[in-house]
Image (cartoon, rainbow, N blue to C red; front, side, top):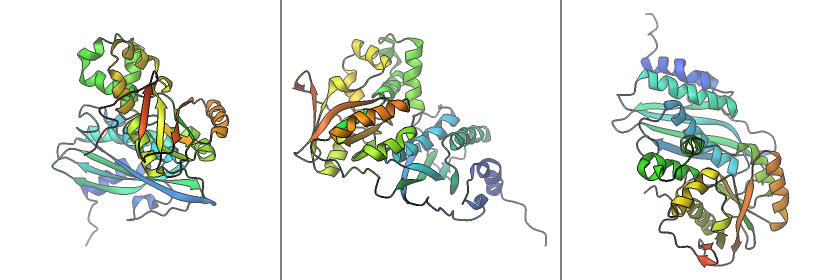
Length: 332
């Protein structure tokens, strides 16, 4: 009896997925992958998912959806001072998903696999009656004993963030509430900046080693600056105080805020920033900033940790406490 021809799934894997495979993936011809961490390193693992219609708009370009899914995980790994080794991909596809969409999806994913040196190690595809769902589990390597967790902050640490905060949240408002955004009177470049920050995160992989050298505690800002800082403080059993005036903002955010001051709550609690939030000894701050700048990345001190109720974050503005109705995006 002659061999059966490859199934539709096998052809799908061979044509679109196998070109992304990396060393240890056995060309995606086995059920498992083998990972050997570099000498003196330990494995770091994270997972994130995108549900189309919840975390992405159905009309979003498929190449940007796939790149965002990978970059969300790369951001987690970078905040732990680690470098990526590879990832596992699970796709739940509705019957209506067409081949052109999938082709663009994997073209985008392949581009980021190459630019971030993060190959595919394996995964799964299945059908779903619900919305299209992408789940990525990413494996990285951190130097032994050098990974900053959320549990290691100490009272008196400086609190810092990279880049700017709130752009993605404003990009989402700009898309959902165009009439409100029109009142901000942004330039074309400013509108494009906010849109890009929402659609395509910029994981801070270039400074991962710097974070590993200097940070005591660290995480990425995915659900909102204040809410994520609350989680870090809760894990470290301490409190924090931050100054609104010190939170770094882009030119676009400053322009919008000048017209619409209520946006400050969205900026502080909106999420999708994918910047690094960290605490470090005050004596390390100047070196950390200088090393980040050498890599083209700005870092800003926004406050300090203090002894107190676990998870309490006091947000100060003009010497008074600034009350927030929501400190972070909630997934439940």
